Length: 409
Image (cartoon, rainbow, N blue to C red; front, side, top):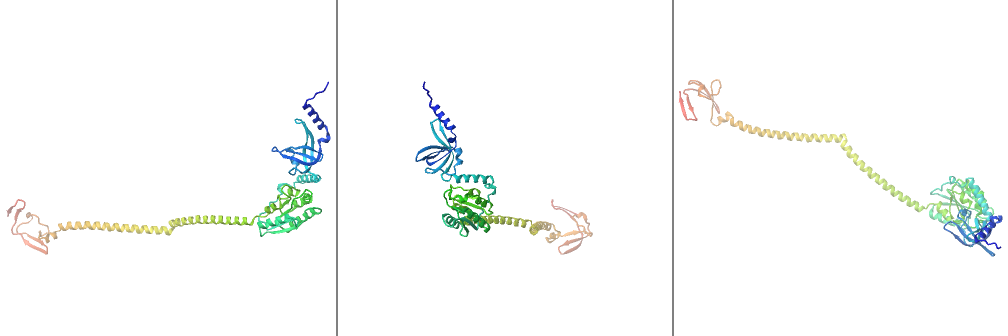
C-alpha cells in the first residue's frame, strides 16, 4: 500500500531533519542584503543573495542587540544563526542572532570582547564621568591636522566664542601608530591644563576607526584628569572611546557645540540677568524707601521731640481755651454786674437824694419812717444830696396818702 502523509506531517518531518543537523543549528552565511524591512514589532526581515541564489532571513527583536549598525539593502554582511523550517508555510529560512559587516567580522568580535571586558571593569560607569565645564577658556583637540573634522571644530568653536584658545595636537587617527599618537596627544593636553579635550575624527569603516577601539586609548581617556568629549565618525558609529569618554558627541561639529558655550547667548543671559537684577534691586529699594518713610512717620509720632511738641501744642490750645473761657466768664459777669449796678442804682439812697428826696434820721442815726418815731421838740437829721440838716420837730401831722385823710397833733 502507498503511504499517504499530510502536508503538516511532511513539514514537521523536514523541520526535524533541520533541527537534527548540527551544522544548520549554528552557521554563518555571507551575502548581500536585499528586501530589508524593519517591522513595527521590532523584527527585521531580509534576504541574503549572491550570484548563486537567495536565502530568506529574519532577526527577531530579542536579538537586535547583536546588530551594531542599521542594515540596508546592498550591505555585504556575515549572518550568524540557525537554519530552520517555518512549518506553516513549509519554507526554510535563516533565523539570525548576530550580523556583522563582511570583512569586519573579526574586528567586530574583538570590539565586542574588549567592550565587554572594559564594561565589566567599570570603565563605562556613570560615576566616573566628569562633567563638562561651562565657559571654558582653553580647548584641546586631538585629531588629524588636516581634514573636515578639525576645520569643523575650529569654525564652530570660534564662531560660538571668538575669545577661545584652541590647542591642537596633530595626531595620527588611522593606520599603524595611530593609537600611540592619540594616547600621547591626550597626555600632552592633560598636562597643558586645558579645560576640555575633544578626541575624534571623521567617519569611516571599522578598520579606519579601529585606533579608537584600542585598549590603550580607552585607558588614556579613563585616566585623564581633564574632561574628554569623544567625536569619532558619524552619528551611527560607535567606538570604545565613545563609551569610556565623559561625553559622546555624534560628530566633531556636535562636539564643538557641546564643549563651547555660545558667547552671544552668554552675553544675552548676562544682559537679561543684569536687567532682572536691576529690576529686583529697584523694587527692593522702593519697598525699603516706603518702609523707611513709614518708620520716619512713626518715629516722628513716637519721638520725645514730637511728643513734647504735641504736648506744647496741647498746652497752648488749652491755654487759649482757658483764656477764652475766662474772657467769656468775665464778659458774662461784667454783663451781670452791669445789670446789678443798674438795679442797685435804682435802689441807691444817693440816687434817690439826687432825685430830690431826703433821708431823715433821729439823733442816733435811725431812719425815721413813721411819725410815731418822733415827738414835737425832737431833733432830727435831714440828709440831702450835699449835706445834713438838723431840724427840730415843731408839728406832727399824720397823712393817709392812700385815702387822702390827715390827723394833726
